[in-house]
Image (spheres, rainbow, N blue to C red):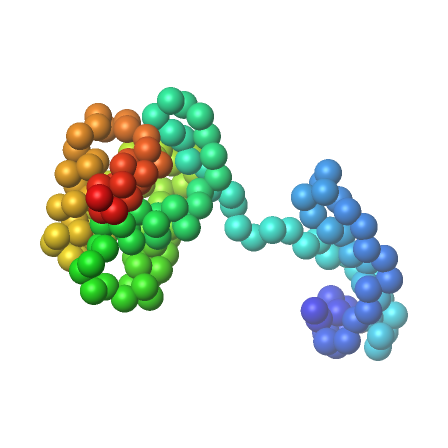
Length: 152
Ligand SMILES: [Zn+2]
């Protein structure tokens, strides 16, 4: 962090405390070169992504659940675990671009869209489960059913 006065990149923290009701850390810094004091704030950069389920309940987005659903759909298809991770990552990126909150149904559609480009059979498996429900069907219930279907 450059000193705003002399631009020297050598400052020390002289005080550190919570701010904004714990959502940020406020730091008083002092330049070692010119002794100028200034304040910085540290905040979480990532906005939490909230998923709205079909019954209206909300929960934090969980990428592991996406990976589990894709893993069930691609079971026995010889698809690398790294591919599953990258698909889930792409889904998360796409969903985050939509902004929070996001519906579970929308996440299902994004997953389907990605699966189509990876493996036709996996896409059809996921779609057949998804289409048995209405558009607002609970994504996690779908994932569970998908897992059971793939296991049986
Ligand atoms: Zn300075």
